[in-house]
Length: 215
Image 1 (cartoon, rainbow, N blue to C red):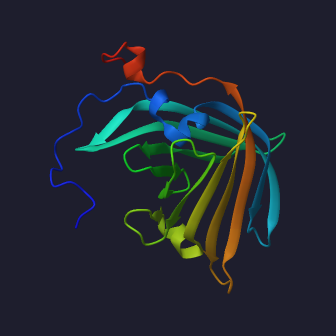
Image 2: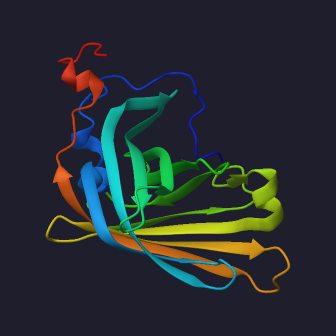
């Protein structure tokens, strides 16, 4: 028996336009954040540690439907720099999505080195920790890389754990397994940081327009 309804076209009625009120476990992530104590363990010629400063903006989007499926979510932009260096060390854009009916969480991501991914997980609405993951070769939670990255730094898996702290901050730990050309063993590339809110989120467009179209 399929887990999905037979009617794949009819959208839900009376969808609440208030994204912030329906983000479930993603609600604590809404806003603008900074973290100055990030740590990146990357391959380089040999394992290298790099501290970093991070800014993340996560803003609520209008409810999204796929026929009967309903998502609430956040659009995000991440910019990371090294201390005392204005050059962008890492840039990432994407969406965090939550499906209230099933508890499904999705993170999409894209970076300007020619790589994108969709990672999935699940959590209850008031979860204070959750994780998402993606694997190379999957069509539902997969990883796509440009030809050079696939040749030289193949990404086999990605896992991200998010923890919400009682003081309102949140942190993450990311693990990416790389198969680097001419190296026998996979390399575990890790990143972690703790973020502090510096600005509140902006209401999603539908709410800013009082329930009517807003641009």
